[in-house]
View 1 (tube, rainbow, N blue to C red):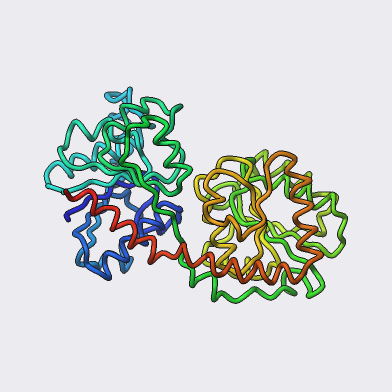
View 2 (view 1 turned 90 degrees about the vertical axis):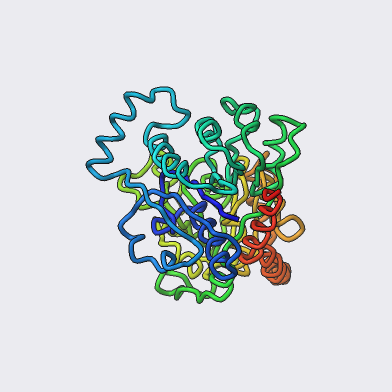
Length: 391
């Protein structure tokens, strides 16, 4: 098939600036390059770091870039905002979409895949006749979504990242039967075979029981409740490594939530290590320092890549019953309910602290379970799903 990929309009592909969605796009593009399945053109925002990226040498994957941050593009965006006041998204994203569609119109594609921007279809469907596929990574299309029924009607197929997201989409129109789940994935090898950082260099020793949390430091991730749970335990040799920042990058100014988190941690500050923003390449080595991982989400997590990362690192895992998380680790992790979460986390941590044999068994189970979410499986299943488009 000849396929176009419409990206988010924020971060570039290849994922030189990170981004979960962009990394997942890279995974299936890498697979396509290896197996030469389809002729794919990616429409992405430009970034100088993409210029020398090896992915651009592919014979089957092609990249068309739209500059949105040059001085000329900023002028164009401002003019665009004056004449397009009723866009579904912010005018900067709508400008990217407008420029991408202008180029797509001049070509013929068997299918166009929209990455995680369901509202694109309101503009795109009327301007180009093709098969439209939505690849949905977040809970952006549900009964509460603006123009939800019109948006869903515009798509021939929806591929979601979890059954939780699939159910949210199908609730918009129960008669819509073209939504299926392809679970997300990571580069398993990167985490399984990583070497741990030297504990001593981080103020840790062999006697410390180390809990690791990895993810954004935002309210919905539950890290505040994790700190509160640790405070109730009163275990002097317990240590918590908090890996991450408030956003996908360094915090120039601490967010109000991080300030609150640090204030909560102050009484046990000698037991907590805040790493701040960590380059993704280093995350596996931080995880490997841990005895257990805790992912305490208190919102409906669409999937939970950090859950897979912890399992691939061979860590016994404590997490919550939220969104798509149980689909990943039911029967392998300790899944606690979000009601009375502080007590539930504390009890689960204490249980694993007191039972090393249980930790050993959970570690083995984590490693085995993580293999279900390898990037090769993900890319293969993704392209198999696309075969339903070509008919």
